Image 1: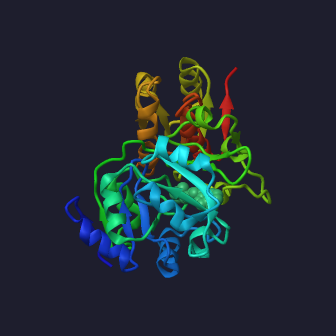
Image 2 (image 1 turned 90 degrees about the vertical axis):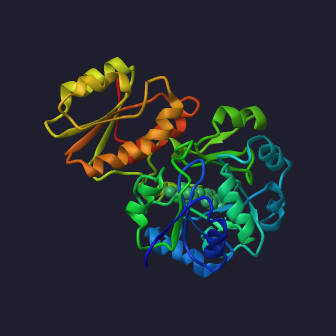
Length: 338
Ligand code: AMP
Ligand code: MG
């Protein structure tokens, strides 16, 4: 199959692909997604096949406006509307009780469904024109870092999808925050572009799922099914070093091998001369870390490195989402300096 490149003028063609049961690369503010009609079991199966995604990892349904929630969800708590009004369109996915028309293929058999309204006018227009909710996981092959440009998505999906709609690089860079509203207190399943602190302002107490900060042991059943899988990982093994940036840079310099790659803050690039280096922005610029993290991890696969050392951002605010992705890429191989 030849994968067509669509531009922002091609809304009708894009909507036609979705309505016809095809696979479409969609831009969003978080990462590029692999979209299909979320009510069509056959189309949804196509997503799993193209990604090589395990069947028990559910998808998120994307809708163009809050008023579509009732079509696919029931017993919706008032807090869902409060959150939607505050954070939608935007990088927040809410887990709610599903209606029967949402197929098991989309939810991996769960009686809940993840709902999101993306902050990308182009994609909302495509969904509205298609007239169906779009199921979309991140547009990477399963296990790889998520794509934040159309080119990165094509590295994994060329020839496997009908088309990709290019709307430039993603503004946020890490996937949506996932909050489960079917439990009390609400539970953060995945940190993302809407921060834990922002959610707590609206919801009061929020429980943070264990899988956000540590490795699930085999046999453990995490609440967000996707969280048990190896994720976001470049080919070379990653070691994350946590602590004051001056100290972590010094620690890495003293230990790295001849062909080690380094992921570091802009200010420390000069420490690692002669090594493949990917920078993620100034140490204090969390928004830039989020935009850069996946592209930096992907870049190491195009370079010859034996292993990768990474300076870790701090984990408050948006940093919780960035460190979560980095730690997963490292299989939680983390060295915390005193
Ligand atoms: P991706 O966009 O590739 O990150 O995949 C969507 C993520 O949303 C997966 O990691 C799922 O575990 C999570 N998710 C989707 N639906 C549900 C649900 N009903 N309950 C819990 N997590 C969900
Ligand atoms: Mg993903």
